[in-house]
Image (cartoon, rainbow, N blue to C red; front, side):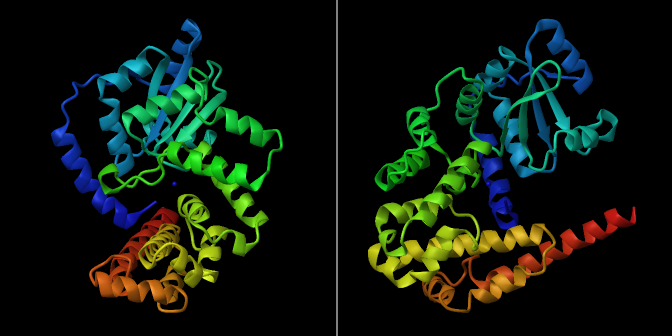
Amino acid sequence: MKKFLSCVVCGISLLALSSSASEPGHAPFFGESFEVSLESAKKVDQSLFVYFCKPESTACQYMDYEFSRWSVGNFLNTRFINVKINVDDEESNGPDLATRYKISSHPTYLILDHNGKVLHEATRAMEGSVFIDTISWLTGETEFPMAEHDAKYEAGERNPVFVQQYLLDARTVLPKNLDVRDLYMEAWGETQDKYTAIAQEYLASREPQDLINLQDFAIVKAYSNTLNDPGIELLLENFDAFVETTSMEQVSETVLKVALDTALLKVLAGDETYLDVIESLEEEPLKKATDWQRNINPESWHLPENMREPLKKSFNHVTESSSRDSEE
């Protein structure tokens, strides 16, 4: 699913969202501890819903708000024993539980059987209705909208026309490309990863000239996250051809957003090569998109001159925090 600059927008959007909401609150009942909740699940023979979070995370703050909705709270309370785990809270064994269940993304939702075995997993923030649909599909309560296509693909169907439409249909189901008002947040977790892998396999199986069309551009845009992804490499290697097929605006916005995401991921990992990503924006073919953006909006965060300083500050913060942790 990411990001320092997006979080600035997220925080503003979250405040606006919470102040305008009208649905009455009905938070799920979260048990006092993991151990007590697991024991309760055993007694009533129910699954355990575990919400792993970091209080300072904007995505988790958003989900706290979504969990306060009556529809979401009622959905969870009628199906699971629920427990919320702060991964930083040592008193509640948060760090140990996060390690045991290999939690690397916040928020993460696990559905466990009453012996503590993972049955289902999902990650990332999502709107309340999407959350309900996601959990319902994971548990088999409702059928996933892509079930028929999934069955065909898993049976070995690889006709390019079918796979192309399969991925386009999945794109409309997966809420990946949410706009600023939806906090840039991705949903579906493992399901999103599944379709991303299928998209990469599909793109690798086709000749480049056969992929320069509107449909495959939509697939590249929906399932590419970094500059090293096959779809973005295809886009950059055939920049002018895709511009002719779509538009300078669509191609430029796509590659510039992915370039920023790539730099941000490197910053958050403490990887100094984020600077190489910034420099690449002044080299062909990315320079074409950069020059276009600079003419359209010189204040854009996607321009190297505007992202360099905030990314440097964020990188310094990440590396300093890491150094303090290692000293402790």
